[in-house]
Structure formats: C-alpha cells, structure tokens
Amino acid sequence: MTRAFMVPLCIILSQISYGQLRSTPVCPPFAVDILDGSVNKMYPESPLGDVMLKLPCYTQAVDEPSANGCAGVFFRDKGIMFYTYRDYIEINDQYKGAMSLPLMGADRSSLFKWFGLPQAKDFSWEAYQIRHGMLVVFFDGAGKINRLLLSSKSPATLKICE
Image (cartoon, rainbow, N blue to C red; front, side, top):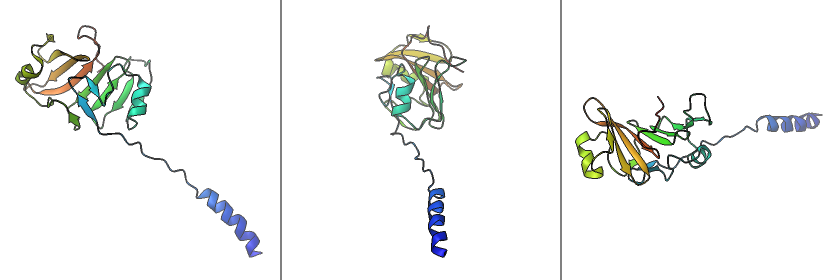
C-alpha cells in the first residue's frame, strides 16, 4: 500500500518541482566607434530587431511606430539608447564602456584636433561630419561634453527625443 501511494506522489512532486529556469541575457561589452559612427558595429539606422538580437540585455524596447515617435532599444543602465525610429544613437555620461576617442567629459576646445571645424553649432552643442553620418556633442555649463549623438541624418533634419 505504501509503495502504491509513494510512486504517484513522487511523480507528482517531480513535476511540480520541475521549475522554469530562465537565463539572463548577456551582452558583449559595449564599444563606441566615434569615427565610424557605430556601437558594436550597429549603426543609427539599424533595425529595432537587429539591435535586440545582437544586444539582448536591453532594459526597454519600444516597438515602431510609437505614440511619440521615440521607438527604439534602450540600455538605460549602460547609458546607451538606440532610437531606431529616428535613426540616432544617444550615449550619455553614464556610459562606462570602451570609446575609440575619449570624448565624454572632454573640453569643448579639444574637439578641433579630432574633427576640425563643426558643420553646425549652437551654444550647447556642435555637429561634426564622421564616416557614417554626423556626431552631435552636447556640453554642460562648464563646456565639458556630457552627451553624444551618432546620427545618419543632418542636424537640420534630426529630431531628438526628450
């Protein structure tokens, strides 16, 4: 009698305790190539699905088209946002990965040696031509770089999400 009771009980318990294991997505280290205009060889016009597939550790993904037009794949904990609907990549001062040129925190006056004269500028930003589009650098009150945009569009047609 005990054996007849124990066998079904063991089967039921083994099915219940057979938990669903989920793996944590692992991303390769992020590397920003400023002159090429890419992050891990992903460009501003890379499709949403390609970014999600190649870099699966995103914190949020907003499908295209979105209500406000700011769809993309976001790595907020890493300081990188791919705005795939508007074709630009934003890198902010929280970014700690590799960068081909040490721009984050650099002084405004140091940009000439790498890029020459800006194609467009304002008090708080400057735009430079790079191999694959435009680089837009933003400055804080002290004239230090605190945000970068890699874009396939010109500064006149680029619409930034806030």
